[in-house]
Image (cartoon, rainbow, N blue to C red; front, side, top):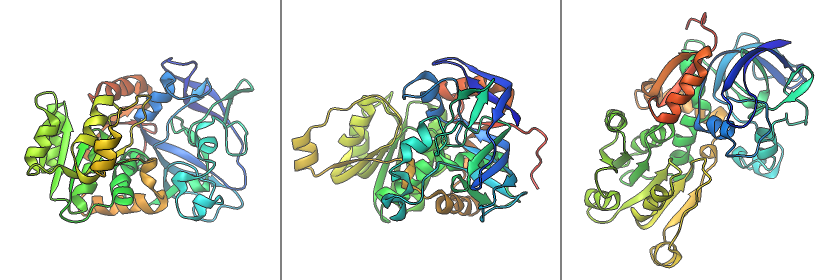
Length: 372
C-alpha cells in the first residue's frame, strides 16, 4: 500500500515528505499501525547526518504512537483499535533476550539499525527500490508495519500524542537509573544535560529517593524546568566549575551516581570527576567522541566505574506502563518537555531539537485525532 513518509534521500539531506512510498505487506507476526504522533530523537538526527553507518534513502523515526489497524495471524497481544506505543525490536529467543535483557539482544544491531526488517526484507520501497528503515518501526510515516514485539499496548483514555517518546527518550533516561544504576534512598545523583533523556533520568533519581538530584546544563530555561520537575539543585556549567560545585553541594564527597546525556568529551570526563569514592557514571549519548580516563586515580584507587547503557536496559512492555503510572501519580511529568508540530514541519521541529530550542518535539501525524 502507498503511504506518506518523511524520507532522507542522502546523508545530511533534509526530510522530504513523499506520498509515493510503498509499505511492505504484513506477515503473520506483524501489526499495521495508523500513526498518530511521533517524537523526534537525537538518534534520528545522528542517522540523518551519518554519524552511524546506515543506508540511504531512509525513513527514520522510532518514538511512534498510534492505533492498530490490522494484525497478523500469529499476533496475540493486540487487536484492531488498540492504542500502542512503539519501541525497539528484540528477537526474544537469543540468550540475552531469554535472560530478560532485550536491549542486549544478540541481533540488536541487525534488527534495529541495519535498514532492513529482521528477516532481511525491505520495509519500504519507492519505485521498487529499497528504502532503509529504523528500529523495524520508522515512525515518520502515516502508516507503518511493525512486529508484535515492537509495541506496548496503552490505555485508550490517554492522549496518544504525548506517549510516543516513552518508547525511547524517556525510557532510556529513566531506565538507566531504575534498571542499571539502581540508587538507594539517600544516595546522590548528578545528571549532565537536561534534554528529554536527562530530564527522565533526573525524575527517576527523585523517584528513587536520592537526597541530592543535581541537574547540569548551560541553558537557564532548561535548568528552571529541571528544578520544577524535581531537581534539588541546578548548576549552569557555563558559569561555574562543575566539579567544585558538585563537591560543594555534597560536603566535598561527590555524588554516588552520574548520568551523561551530552556525549561531549569534556562533559563526559566531568561526569567521572564528580563521583564520590566507589561511584558510577553512565554514559548514554549517541556520540562519536572519546574520553580520557585516569585508570590509576579514578578507576583503580578511587574505585570509580563507567558503564554504557543501551535504551535504559529496559523492557518496554514493563517500563513504559511503569512510567505512565508514575506520570498519573504526578511523579513523572514528562509532558512539560514536549511541544507539538504538524508533520509537514518536520524540518523545523528537527532544527529546534538540534538547537535545544525544544526539548522534545512531537510530530502530530494525524491532525484529526482527538483523545478519548
